[in-house]
Image (cartoon, rainbow, N blue to C red):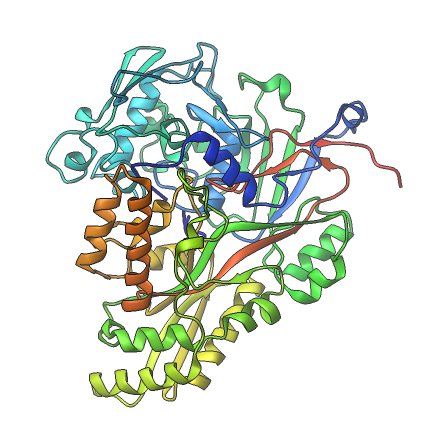
Length: 562
């Protein structure tokens, strides 16, 4: 999924036990001081959380969401068949029990609870899931994730996305109001975790269609069926929003938090100041050394390594960036160690790879994917200068000006300025023009390929290397680079149907080598460590390795001694 992204589909994912171990292995601690019985008995009278985020919410339409903040807010306010709990286990959401598979595990029957409600009082039914899934794959909707997530997995999704079959042929149907049947193209061992993804959340057809183009434009044009409801949000440009406990939620008795107030803060120092002043209980991810150094060793500093990798994307619609030597020169010219150590200084590590470290382990050997994979595009300024000279000669130029799209947070601006300086000093004749824009604008320009270089990244939506690797196939709708390599396409296609885990990983590792070492399709920069400040009074703050960044429903505000 976009971090900018943040995706999807594989064929032979790790089984649930591996999913869980990898989740916990990705972070130093997946909960922030889970509330104990003693703390629960010491609950504060005011169960209000004040939280900061570094970006606006791009959308609250589950069919159209493609970024981690939207997914996180959807996770708080809505619920699908299943969700990930505060111990990283998959638990029932709207579903009543685990899915039941047929003999060859291509058809699943799922029973639903009969007491789940929408915030307008309507009952959540199997028809709401059928409508939502069909809406997500409908070519008329042009959803960013629907085809990418469903094609090759949900029966007939590919033909529907290509306009060859109607949406009603999608492999999902309501056997009655509270029974779903899902038909797959092939067995999917990770099916239960697959359908936790926000794209698969239900939608109330009558309500959505009554709103027309206004659906999800703000808080007053959305229905909710999750732990919280959004009581204030003025749309994608809103700098603040509010969530309130949803008393119609089926498990409302176990939700203690009554209110969560959010404000956008793009300046890390301002965020830290608000935390110190008691105006914010949880900050956004902080990346500036001058701030983090003040909190080293503090019990309020919550640090964990994320399975998220960040990189520069090259738009090959630009003839100059169609040249592999020029792309490789740019990738080699950036001192990634200095970027992570001196600029970020937050525990992040240089990335000479696509699939992150300590993310997925082999089902047969238990080894991390990176253990047998290579290291590519390590910083080499001398080689970068030689390739740059060669590339410019090939395209008949002596200089080149490229526009660079970054984000408008203070941390992003510092990183982007460092990258610009590295490139211009290492590659003679290169001029970088940076546009620092709000996150939703960056996503829009990425989707429309209105850039030359773009700072982007990806966080996993399921626990398997394929969530990173199938981004780079020629037909992938999340790529947005016009990159194509038939060998990569073949290897990814083979890996999606390969039953031999050892061979499958070798195919994925070979594809990664082609993408980076041969093609330099992207310039990997770093694997991110997250650092945020959490107040002593906040217990039960849960972060996730896959899907949404965090959950709020287990938070309890306790009294603390002054």
